[in-house]
Length: 396
Image (cartoon, helix red, strand yellow):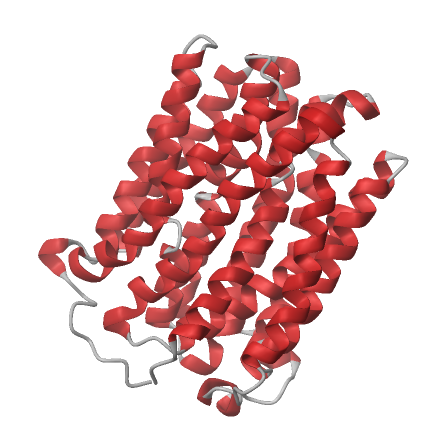
């Protein structure tokens, strides 16, 4: 069933807001570290709190997305995201800041899971890559606006003030989505969803390899969200404004590449997008082995932007292979597994930085990317000479 353009634009905007809030932390990390007197490992607990929140919420959010009209969890998530961001901005101690990060991420999970499920469930196979990549490009637009906005505000008013606009946007999204999506009845997949029970937490076996692959590619995500801002702020001693500008420029390039990645997936196969992502991620990790400098930083950022060509791939593969009534919970398991992996990655990265430096982090991130490249040959397949999704109609 073809959805009106307003639906795509609404989900695009919702994902943009979640990304603005999430990416606003990047330029603020060094200031937060100095304000609370933290080590790099302790600073990584912010991302662990976010990963824990996703771990606890992904499956319930997936089940809700299968059963409830999208406007309800999106609005509830916007309220949680705004409240958590406000708590982070006013937190007198690091513990309350972590609590704010956890509450905000609960909201983000509801918003993103419901939005992505809505788009994937209502796009046919031949256009699923394009529809998904264009909707999720909203998240990359958000990661362009977020660091730039937060960095500029933090440079003049402090890191706490930089979180206030992000919280305001969250509340606006929660209110605005209700009348826009109010006219929509539950989708066919929601009507067909089986009754809620513990047995229905299972997912089709066909999506398990996709989930495993997603866990392995969690490293490149941490590289963009954690390592590169720290590289700029601590390694290059740039102020928050410049860090935000650099992260925004990278996100802008990644957004553009993600926007066109759907056409690449639909026309040249899912595998082409996959290898574009893994090769770029490996190159970005190897740049961290070079001596600290502006050139290495620019190279790592440029290649990290190219990972946008495969950023939506796991979600698209879920849409290709999971039965429609199970898309939401399959995405829930996908995000849960990735969150479980990321729960320990950020503190581990911080520990490696405390012990040695960015070069050791580069090695630690390059190894799993190589494993991903090998495993993906069998899991993803669908290369230009062996198309599997080229003209398959969606009859589920």
